[in-house]
Length: 123
Image (tube, rainbow, N blue to C red; front, side):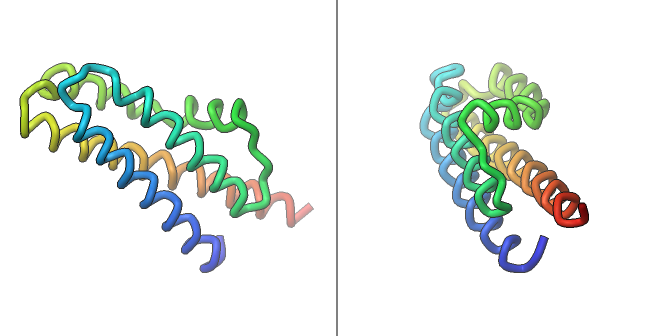
């Protein structure tokens, strides 16, 4: 991944993670509802990351990438069920986990795309 690609990825991932954090904080006391908003944001992030590396992604391919990369969502679900309903604390917890999960997924996907891109150039 060159510097330009890394800067673009940082902007896309950090912006998406920040938006997901705001959604997670705002919807903390409504169980599961934030996923309806967060997943499309993450799918858009993956499609945008694909564009950085010249990888055409349709919505179904982006959803498949997201599904593969979101094993960490289990921990988020557990923390939400245990503590997410507590006003204030739950909002902060949901915001931080939504941010961390989105950042992690974003960088995992970006690094995968960078690897795919470099393998394609070597052929």
